[in-house]
Image 1 (tube, rainbow, N blue to C red):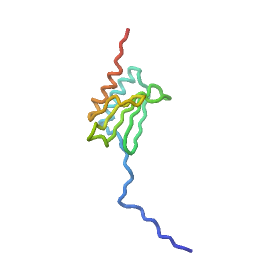
Image 2 (image 1 turned 45 degrees about the vertical axis):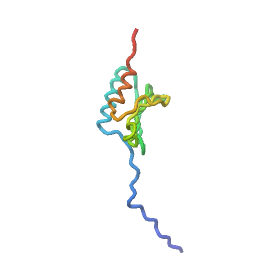
Image 3 (image 1 turned 135 degrees about the horizontal axis):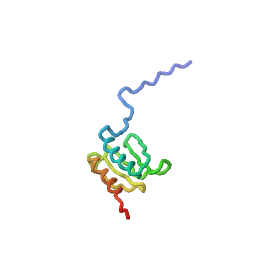
Image 4 (image 1 turned 30 degrees about the horizontal axis):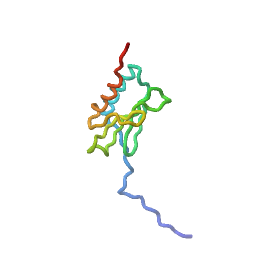
Length: 115
């Protein structure tokens, strides 16, 4: 019988943290989302928290691809801004440091001409 030495658990290593929106950011996002739901434009949303980014996806219907994605990437905090709004085709519509200013691009998309 051979005795094996147990592999010690690394004490200094922590599991990778997830990036998530905080309460204030959710308040800003849901204020815009609520207006668009009341207008009948959007119907569903999805939330993803990953190691390097958090994504709030906005859907017109449940079974479709998201119309827009609001992304938070803390690694871009010092560069271009950690918040961005991405369209369905992957184009970045707006990026910046202030979430309220970045989400204004979504409110501008809701203005239509009615004949």
